[in-house]
Length: 211
Picture (tube, rainbow, N blue to C red):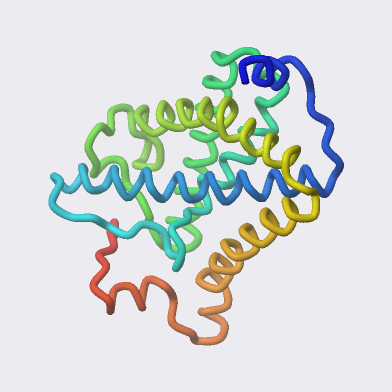
């Protein structure tokens, strides 16, 4: 196992385009679920350990900005994976910029504010409520988990599974999560269909809103 891990660090793995796309699909799914779990747990502590909030606007436990961030991190840092410090710094900076842009866009263009660090615990160094020191540090640490655990696992699956089975698994999982996202973001509004948040609130799930 140790020799295989050294091989991952020292040798570039040249997968064909379809397999590489399958790997990216798995990263998208895993990162989005990881982000949902992180926020589910964090906002429980943020509430004083009194309330669990359902985060994100989908039926499935997945948050898109974490998936986007993970893909960005992969392309920016994979070639430099021998240097964990580089991975951490570049990931923290790039995801901090992504978070600020996304927060600003959502508030000023879409008229919705999904997070506000100025109203949360551990919010030192927050900038306009969109980004704070804690968030970029968490993203930097999460990038280490991505590059040194999740990506090698995805590579391992791509090599050990039959290509057809791997592609069916990765493409199908990603398609399900992305369809859920598109339904709640676009189709529900265009077709006047109920969004996940509407249904879940009727079922008693609690959502967190910022003014």
